[in-house]
Length: 440
Image 1 (cartoon, rainbow, N blue to C red):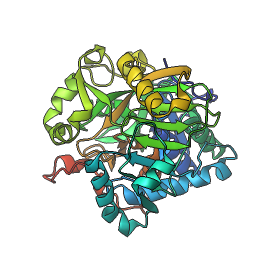
Image 2: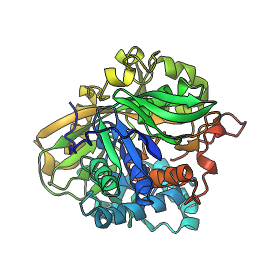
Image 3: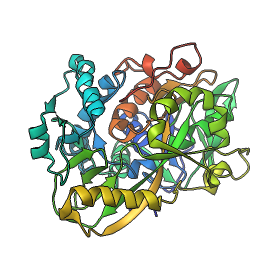
């Protein structure tokens, strides 16, 4: 079942032309459209389903610098600043609150990794504090657990996945952007190797600049133009409770993660628990992903389901005159895992008896699109002039999204980049660079 997402209006008429067309209405596409429109460019945002309908509404909602890879830390600062500013710029709440995030563990290896990460964070002035066993127990009192320690990421926060991307897209409209939902981009109109337009199911928009922020669908879209983007999606499950007892705003333990929503309900999940479906695209890029799979496979199960034949990683061929895979699957909405739901509820209620008997309002599956090094791609597409990519959030995409969108907007507009874009270039996977898996 899809999570409930704020719905926004469509602009009824497709523009004949635009300075930039943004493909994909998730958090990255919405924020990129916002930053492009804010600087005075004409922007058309096209989305095959409805804004925010896929992974941007299916995540924890955490907006953090804590535990990020060093390559992402400058961008995470840009993202948090943007989260801070959206409400005032837009005149509407995106649900962002700097509530701090709390982590606790009884795993000595995990605690040592958290401690070691502080050296990574030190040059970036991240406001983080290690918690002693006593402090962790006071911050996250859990039945039957003897925490060895924890972390308090003091300045981090959370936003509301159900409203963030749609609200920000509406904000882009305030600056002149147009929003076109149920309007899949089938392909590009190309002239001499350069973008001349975007061909949608509702007509063509003339443009010389396209940002593909299609989440899990990005690699499939780009492949038709010979642009190789190694991308693998892992399937996760989360659930939302009815409004319930207040245990805290954002809590991590090895068995569960809890995020309190604005209405007093919780989003519950197990961090790192996921299923990797075997797919044609997955097989194509298997060698590229081997280092990441080796590092993270303990938390990832292997599965086979309909995604081998349908969805963003299946074999597909089409042309601009025929129905595309993006129209055949308006919303990527995998079924949640009943086994994972049971594990989430057991992990939560065992540790927090106050939540015993909590009601599940809804549950859902989602696909987290990953890169081989778990760091996003924000880059011009080599070989196709005018095409840019912003995808591969690798489980960090929601909180980091405004930073990804801002850097992508800088590149598309040929403005000074807000951070060094080199770590996010697509060519790093093909130019002989050593692939270092990010995160901990």
